[in-house]
Image (cartoon, rainbow, N blue to C red; front, side, top):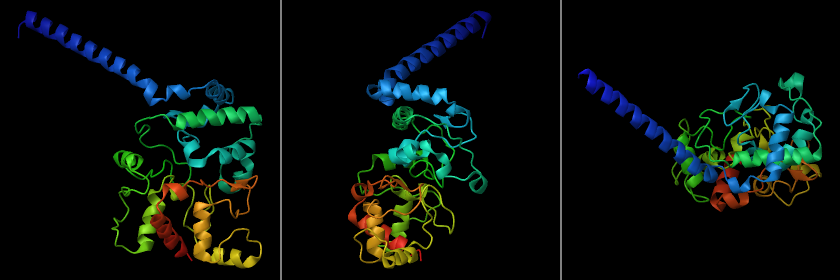
Length: 291
């Protein structure tokens, strides 16, 4: 290649690179409104973003992979915890975590109710942005992060696209199950793959309380609660109590400020619709086995 050919090649390569950059940039801007749900970017969401910056939340937390990595990533926190939990937590974090015992240090910011409402609206909008799997490894909130966070990005997309009650992919380390397997094994798979994943808030290890109480020995505790005289629900036996806790979590509230507020459980009340009846029964079978 002589000098003239080299010059032409360099100019042509630069031109192709610039053209590709411009096309990709234009395509990104074309997709932004759809990916970000621009139509939902309300004035309240914008005010919530201002609250986020006013209290320097980004100094400890991250969203979309940006921020400090001192505290959990909050990109999907609104879907993981729900509005009642976030509102109670923002009002007084100390009711949820003890600094000495849990080694967590979330300062009380004394946000007004309006600021809390706006900030939740902002976090809810953030959680619904199609971030296409970014960040690839979000900091865990407790036990797990995104629903099915132990799944690969492709598997998470399959879960999101699957119809309610459809077959969900299993985590890489999970034992594959078949429909003819023991209901307990099937229930354990549901525990990992439901959306939101049960394991995002519950541990099955004794004494390890996350956002929700540990489910170790839940069957024995259910029996005690049913016989205590203080039970407020409609269940007649252990299986009924666990089933009721899944599909109607506010029927009987577990004591503790970190589990409910104003008579409403922080546990999502969507499993009755998002899970098929047989999946609920499999989950009941699994949890009933945790004696």
